Amino acid sequence: MKRKQRAALAANMLFLLITAVLVLIPFYWMIATALKTEMEVLRTPPTMIPTTLAFGNFISATQVAPFMRYFINTLLVSLIVVVISTVISVLAAFAFARLSFPFKKTLFFLVLATMMIPQEMLIITNFITIA
Image (cartoon, rainbow, N blue to C red; front, side):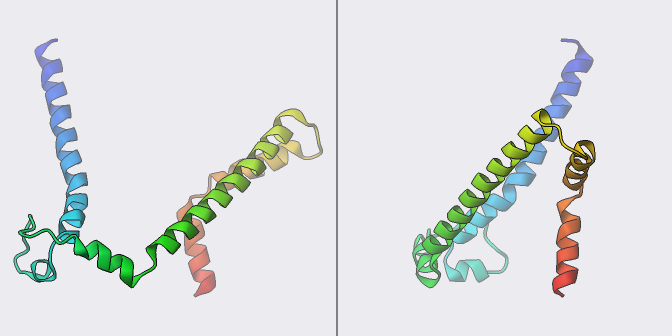
């Protein structure tokens, strides 16, 4: 490799390394804080590494809220949404690909147009409607 290519590769790797560290810091902080005692969490300045590991925090968190029920509900809703979406999408794709019906191109354009609307815009309009 030429000198410029090696320098560009090194700069690229350095950028990726810095970005990876910046992305992983909040995850480390979350795990470290979960393993700290209450006094360590409230200490000023905060410590980066917990002095004593408090695994009991996880047990008390599961006793306060029914996390298993929440997990099962989320799993059930996700599974139902995926199955229904897949079935409807497969049927619509087959209809648009193989069948001839009136306004086929117009309906296909509308389906594509709704896919191009950012989800954030829908959240904002839903919030305004509810508020």
